[in-house]
Image 1: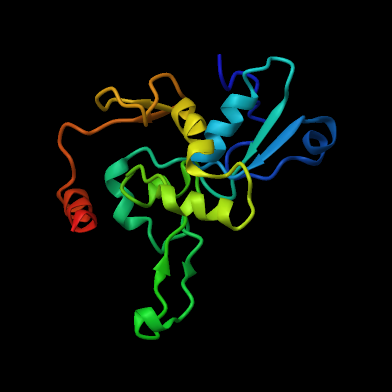
Image 2 (image 1 turned 120 degrees about the vertical axis):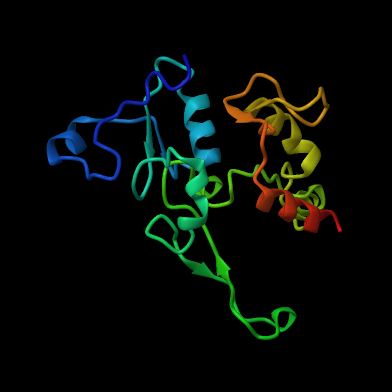
Length: 181
């Protein structure tokens, strides 16, 4: 069972005791329990002989997804800001990033947003061989269990569940509509 050998050695958000810190050894330490960190830790832990520690900076996961608007700018947010730039009329803007189990997915209405294929392909153009969209797509597919119609771009057996809610949030629908314009 994925995740079976990811021990809970300290309550979430609490430091390890000195004794626990000295007696535990891990093959991998995954820093950040956002969507990607949780998937990575689950995949690594599929080998029963591998010990994986998953570390997150702050409190446990939010269990009520309707609370996401109240998390931005709160203790669960790293409170990053963009650099002032010409394209934003010299303004700096909030750049919410999650500091909790679930990561930024907890701050963005749980919307799944995969990077645009051309962004990954630009990495290859910059010399990062193996990081193009076609290189990464098999890993994206392996990471997902999607409720969407069968697609060559989404998976059906991964640890990251993607679904379309029965009653989508109107704000989320507006956000998607703006992106389509």
